[in-house]
Image 1 (cartoon, rainbow over the protein chains, first blue to last red):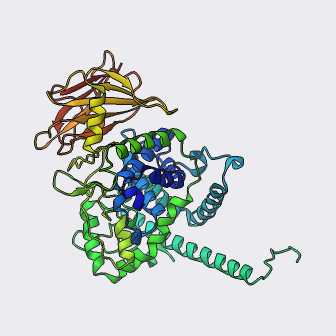
Image 2: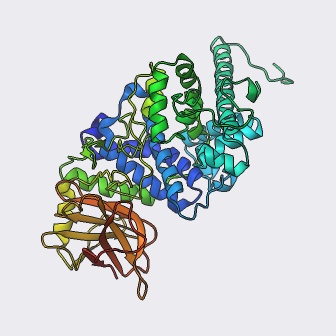
Image 3: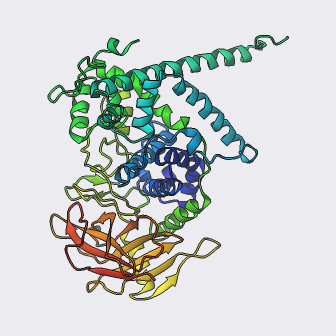
Length: 198
Length: 303
C-alpha cells in the first residue's frame, strides 16, 4: 500500500488483483445485481486508489479495510436505489459462481473458507441470522428491519447483538478446533475420522 | 443465552434500547454494523470511551462483523471493470499522481475528504467509505478513535463524491481532468483508449460557460463527466447531472457534485446511458431537484 500511496499504478494493479474477487463477491451479495456490483467495485477501487495513503496498517489488514469500503459503498448503492428492490438475496441465488474447474488454488481455498464460515452463520438461530443478514447484506437499518419483521426495534437490536456474540463464539471454537488439528498434525499424530481405519 | 439474558438486549416492551442522552450504551452491535446515524454514532463513540462494558462488547463482536464479508460465495470480478479502473488509475498516475497519494480535499464544511482509512464513522462527511471501520479497530486497541460526522447518504460518484449535506468532493486531480478536457476540445468527439481495452469515447460539451471545459466519456454503457474551470456553485447549491433522451424531458440522476477549488472534477453518470441524447448540468439547491430549476450550464450531446 505504500507504493500505492506514492502513486504507483502497477502496485495498485497487484492490490486490485488480490482483492477484487472478494470485493466483487461482497458487492454482488449486497446489491444482488451484477451491474450495480460492478459499479460498486469500480467506485470502491478508484476511491481506494485516491486514498491509499490513508491506510493505517496498525488498524488491521488491507483486505478488511478494502472490504469495509466496498461494504459501505454497496450499502449506499442499495439505499440510494429508488426502487429499493433489495430483500436479502440468498447466497445461492446471488452467485454466478466460478466453476470449480476454473478456480485457482487460492479461489478454491477461499470458497472453502466461505462455505465454512457460512456454516457458522447458518448455525445461528434463524431469527438472529435473519437480522444479521438483513442488516449487513441487505443494507437495512435496525428500524427498517423492525418494520419489515413487525418486531419492536429493541428486539431487533437484541437479536443482532446475540447473533454476533454467538457468531464470535463459533469463530473462536472453529479456530480452536483447527489449532487442535494443526497441533496434532505437527506432532505427527494420525488424525482418524470415525470409522476410518488406521 | 436467551435474548432476555443480554444486558440491554431485547426490551420486553419493545422499546428502543439506546435512548437519547444515554450515549447509546449497548449499541456496540449497531455501531459495528454501521446502523447508527451520525448523531448516535458520535454519541456512542464518546460514550464507549468511558464505558468498559461497551468497550468489551466492541472487542468481542468486532471479529464477528469482520468475518461477514468472508462468508459470501466467490464470484469472479469482471475483467471489464479491471480495465476501466486501471485505465483511470494509469491516466491519473501519468497526470502527476497527485491524487494517488491520498490527496485530501475539503468538503463544504472543511472536513477532510477522501479518507477511507481515516478511521471515521462517517464515510460521507469524512469523505471515506468507512462507517466505523477505524473506530472498530481503534476500540479494539483501546477505544481511541475519533468520531466523525455522518451525513445522510452518498450519491453515485466516480471521481466526485457528494453528499446531500456537505457535498464533499473528491475529484480527479485537476491536471487529469484538465488534460481530459483539453485533449478533446469543445464540440469534438474522440476515441481515447487503445491497447486492446474497450474504446472510451470522449465528447466535449457543446454548451459551457466561458472558460469551462466539460466532456462526457463513454465506455460501453458506462459514462462519466469531466469538468475543468468550473466555478463553485452558489452557497447552498450543487451541480446536478441530467440525462435527456429524444423527445423526453431531462431526467434527474443521482449525480450531484461540486468541483474542486481548482474547478475540476469527474462524476459518474449512473445507469445505462444507451439512448441518451444529451447530458446536462444545472445548478440546483443542495440535495438536488427532481426537475431542473435553472437552465443548463453544460450541455453535452452524446449521440
